[in-house]
Length: 373
Image 1 (cartoon, rainbow, N blue to C red):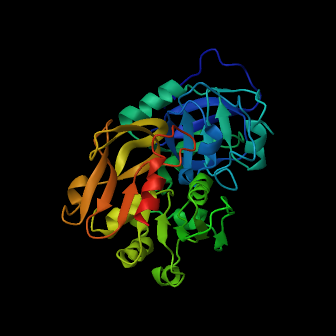
Image 2 (spheres, one colour; image 1 turned 60 degrees about the vertical axis):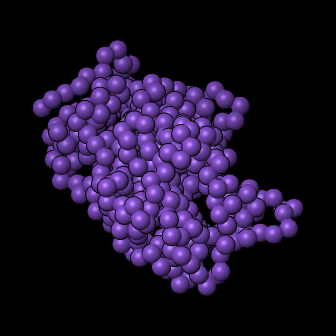
């Protein structure tokens, strides 16, 4: 069995390990909840913003390995939550630090315990990142209880169904419709924007509200008929986790909304719009996860540094050029990062324009949506 060891790591009593499906073991110590869990292992290249990342519903089912060596410095607070809970299945770190920030209300470790999320520190995250980059995303078993033999954990990882073909949007979506808290109370007109929640981030709702919209959020399986009877000015298809090809119900909803109401799609919502237009999606080798990904707008030539989190991508040659225009591409791997419908008022972006965490380069996307309405 292949083994990666941690050199110079402090000795801890709470020994833990990550077992990958290829039989590689990464050892460390538990710094989160004492639970064992299965998940898909991805690496995130963001230097900061771990709270927004951990609470992003798009990370459901995933173990996040941060390439930045130290986490925990800024603690946790109520204002930076992107959902009502920690959404990632687990956390893999080189070093866990106590908080030292005036905005901190609790430590990262306390938050992990409160939300029953396992984590291990002392991991050789450079070696893990290189393995995922070169060999692709892997299934893993994170053992923090000390009750599972390593060989059995490897078998558990291999036997796990994984994320392909799985509808995680139905797991993370809101159970009931709700109205987002209004901002800009002085605005006279509040046109309604309906948000189909496949795993929406709070900052997306904040941005819509800040642009003067009355925002109502609906469960992922809400039908087009139920949305249209509210006569919204526009519909936003949110980000979300797992495989877009597993959301046949959502694709049908988008098809029925096209031409009836303006649409904006983000991340998973972008992929659903492409599927509704007859396109296809495929899995990336190791995904895009981080807040430093360069994307070019093909219409203007401008480059934006963007925040991203997705394992699947729209296949460019699957799009009918009479129906959809590819508007943005990744400068890292030339994959599709944005599209616009030619016959209907609808566009979508693969990256996260709400920038939580990340740079603000893509914020004008909400102004584009506002103009379209």
